[in-house]
Image (cartoon, rainbow over all chains, first blue to last red):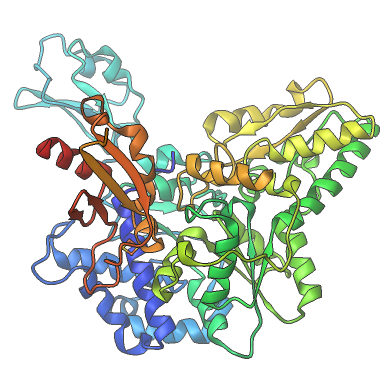
Length: 479
Length: 82
Ligand code: FES
C-alpha cells in the first residue's frame, strides 16, 4: 500500500524548497543552504547527528536536480550543490542515463544482511536445534545465546522453524522484499545497489524503504527551466489518474497548471481513447489469426518485466502504443517545438519517455504538488477550466485496474469477437511466476490486462492522494 | 445535538501535499471511544502556511490549531481533552 510517511514528507519538503529557488532565480545563492535550513542547528536529528541528516538532504537535492546519488569521484564528495545546479543547466537532458532509481548511500541504513535474527527470548537450551540444523554452520553460541553470523547465513529460515521458543524471527529487508524481480541487493559494504539490467522502474523499493534512501532522478529542474523561458511553449499532458490528487475536481487542476506557467493542458485520456481503439483492432486481428491471448502494453513497468525477465511471452504483448505516446504525438502536431511534459503517478514512464521522441519530460503528482506549493498556487482556490484537449470516459477509465480490459473486451464484443478478461492486478513475485507460464495456462481467448501497481495507476508511486479518495473523484469524471 | 469536537482538516494544497492527504480518511479511522464526540470537516487554506517557518499540515480542533498534524496526534489530543 502506498501510505504516506515521514520519509516521503521530508522528500517533498526538499522539493518545495528547491522549486522555490528555481522559480525565484536564486538557486546559485541559496541552494547550498537547503540542507542547513532543513536541519537547523540544535534541531532534533533523525540519524546519528544533524551532519548526517544534512548529508542526506544534500544528496536528495542532487537527485532532484536529476543526478544519480552516488559520487563518481572524490571531488564529487565536496562539490557544492550550486555547481551541480550549473552542471544541470549545461548538461540538460544529457545528464540522464538508464538508471532512473538511485540509492542514497548515506541514507541507506544497511539493514542486516541476514533476514533472521535471534531475539533475547533465546534460552540457550541444551538441544540447540538451531545450531544442529543450520546447513551453513552460521550459528554459534556466545554468552549463553545463539548468534547468527550474517556473512554465512543464507536466510533459509530453518533455525526459525526449529527453535522451540520461537526466539528467532524473520526480519525482512524492505526494499528487497518489495522488488518483484530481485533487482536490488547488497554490495560488499552492505548498502543496497540496483542492478540496471534487472530494474523495471516500478518504484516499489522506493516506497518500501523506511529511510527514504531510494529516490527517482527528478526532471523538475528541467521542466521549471522551460516553463520560465518565455520563448518556449510548454504543454502539460496529464494522466487520467490526476482525478482527486489535490482533493479537487480536474477543472481546478487545469487552471492551477496554467497559473503555474504551463501554456497548454491536455488530457492523456485522449491518447487512451486512441489506445483503446487500436488495441481492440489488434486484439480482434490476433484472435482471428488463432492466437489465444494478448496482454495490454500501456503499463511501462510491465513492458520492462517482459523484456528483461519473461521474453517468452513477448510476442503476446500488444504492440499498440501507450496513451502517453499518442497524446505526445497529437501535441507535437498541434504545437510543433513545444516542450511536452507528461504528468502522472509513474516512475517507469520516465524510461518510456526517454525512449520516445514525443515526450520531453516526466513529472509525478508529488513533484507537481511541491511546485504548486513553491509557486503559491492553491488548487482548491482556482476556478474550473476546460483543458485544451479533453477525452471520453473510456480513456479516463485507464487509471484504474480493469479500465483497459473493459474497454477492449466491450468493443471487441461489438465486432462479434468474444473473449474473457484475465487481469493481473499488481506485479509481485507471485504474479511474475504466473506470467511466466501464461502461454501454457491460457486456454480460451483472453485479454490480459497487466497493471504493475495494484489497483492501477491511482495507486502509483508518485500519487498524492490515497486511492480511496482519488477513486471517488475519478468516478465523478467517468459519468 | 452538536458534537464536542469539531476537527477541521486543512485541505489547501500546501497542507494536503505535505501530509494532510492521509488525514482525509480520519473520519473512518476514529476509534470507537471517541467516534461519537467528533465531527470531521474539510477546510480550505487556514492561511497559516504563509507564515515563516510554518509547519504544515494544519488542523483546527475547536479553537486549537495543531501544526505538523497527523492522525495519531489528533486522536491523542482528543482523548486528552475530552
Ligand atoms: S494550506 Fe493549510 S494553512 Fe494554507
